[in-house]
Image (cartoon, rainbow, N blue to C red; front, side):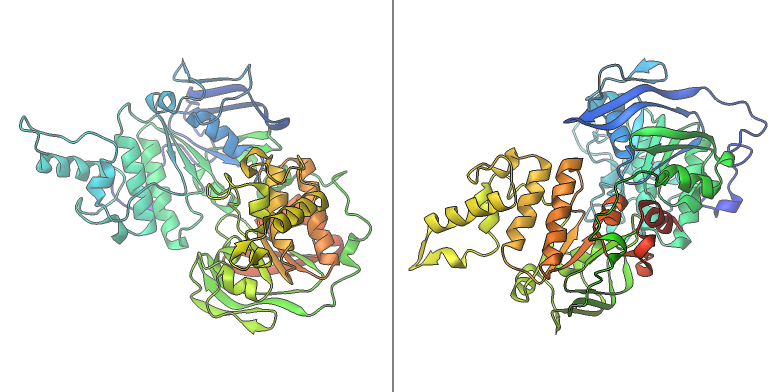
Length: 525
């Protein structure tokens, strides 16, 4: 398939979102009554979903809507509730069995493409596969290179099989991942693309669309998962919208104007959780000193981030995948390099951010992946005291009695359940693990607390308790910044919410604009 711009590529259908003159193809994948419950929390509720041969079916919904759960069930990583059913080409999918999904032709192109930069295009194509060898067991390199060239040209990738993957552009990497999926044993029937344009520059989006159309032209179905609604008229034939684990709309793309899509995705504000009187309209707007300032900071997906947080306020940051929201904490922790701009914490410019430097300035950052393997086997006590052990060292020995006493007090103060400081952290629920994570940093009496997705994967009860801890901390004078995809949480707890787009703060919401619907609508604007 030639590597052409999108307007030169033939469409397999009469037009995006329409059935045109061609009859609707029979579904190759059919899911019925698909439900999934996690410890009393319903993630999917009686979902019906199908994918047809030679179509692009867009799956949309806000974070937490159930998209990831649906895909993980189809990929064999989750077992659905009893009564769920999925067939591919008429054959039932064996739930909880990734091999069944692979054998039936389901292929998944994740945001993390699973490519190895230090290996060649050819070597990446052959990862996990058997090489073509002769009788003596030697690899037939000529045959392998020819096969690799055919595989990558099939998706419009023009590169030599011996070039390192590190030399490829972002869209070329995606092309390579697609080529690997298509050449796998048991041919591909459906490709799932998860936010494929989230990190692509605009100039390369059209090239990716050309790749997808080329896949569809080969009679393969495509499931396209994206938050970027402006892309759907260009690439989608049909759309299914999920909200709160249920299908709230499904049909040809032409039936979904942008306004209707946004309304389906975010729902009506109605009787959603109300903010407590002390929080309504942020009438107590913070008047404390400025504690954190980003001045034209670039790094990761951030292009020119400018904002400030003052003592005693809770500020939220919201934006779509790839907006740069989640790079704020990563840059502060030194996990993503800052390439431009200045960061000031408690009035001091931070030249090289990292946890130790931040702690010296009474600042704490909780990254999104708190359930790290390194700390889950440790006890609650060990996690609570880990950031600052100095009070327990005396004469070269640990004062364990003092440490245990302080840990027990923290467990009681933050209502960690079960109230057992010697319990292994990994044995606690997600909500209680998060409470421990918040408590251990509040113990250091910070002036600044930055949290990345603090309630992700936490049930409603745990969320409420964590948000109350953060609100209480702000009332005590702590400057709190929450970077989150949970717009309802932000509406409940924040004094201000900053909407981030393309690596910059685009607008700020305060007062009566701090509603779930308004925050979500601004994210998609």
